[in-house]
Image 1 (cartoon, rainbow, N blue to C red):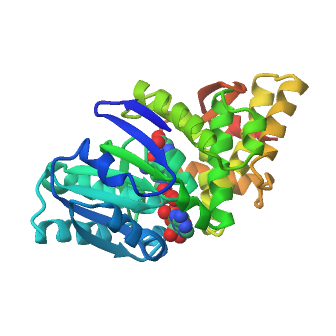
Image 2 (image 1 turned 60 degrees about the vertical axis):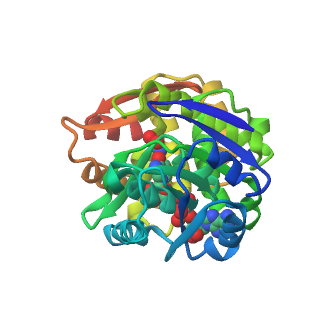
Image 3 (image 1 turned 90 degrees about the horizontal axis):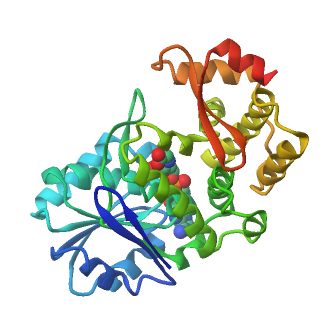
Length: 339
Ligand code: NAD
Ligand code: GLY
């Protein structure tokens, strides 16, 4: 399948069963001869050799770092930059991110900043990276003070999805991506419950991507409508932190969404039918929607997390499925809607 994203940089998202077409697709966009494949130590043993073998005609280098969010830091970023510099990469050469969102974000930030930007290809291997992080150009690493604090908007030149990588993805990671897929189903009714029931399919991936691409094309630099992609995330992030990251991001988004349904139903006096449609949709995520923490604790953490915003916390609420709206609420207003 194929989808073109018309951002400041126009690029294609393509999917193939394997990595076999990677060199051909990269050559359409990239003029350089050198490629650095960045991956983590879970994904590299599974797919590095296949990726290298597919890159015929290129001089291929690799950089592998320990898996997990803890590696999405300045140290990893500088190490990637170091390899690019030592190997004499120039702007036309290319960084390939082979992995989930952690690899994509860190490798993308290195690509964005080395020589003020070199060619960049995303090969997402997690469901979440396929439908979300590999597209839209947000690249970043974390600082000790917080997540994604050092980053840049930098669109890739190509997103290449090798569908075979989904076969090794652990169940927990599938559920994590499914939380985001259900989020998209709340943002647009182009994703039907029947499609969600089929699980991870190429059709679902591209339906999610179409929604994301449309939002990114409207608001690439996150000044307005792109905030809708944070549906369920405001409370979700707080739950993620309170669980000390033992719950996955997608699971927390589902829990956040569950409360957004309650808040929206109250604020917009939604009919029982509308609310029930939302509750049924959420159940398709496969994640238990209940909050494992006290509501007041979650709200406190939410306010702490978003303390830089003036006058309250921005929530994305739903007037209906496919009708998100951004609302600034004081803590008291949020509390009242959550009771
Ligand atoms: P991740 O990159 O840590 O991947 C999850 C786990 O799955 C890792 O252990 C990884 O090694 C493993 N894995 C990945 N693909 C695999 C495969 N095919 N087979 C077996 N194991 C595989 O996490 P993620 O959920 O992909 O991404 C989360 C990150 O993405 C966070 O850092 C988040 O901030 C970021 N993110 C960025 C954006 C964006 O727009 N840039 C959007 C959403 C999330
Ligand atoms: N994942 C949120 C965004 O891309 O804006």
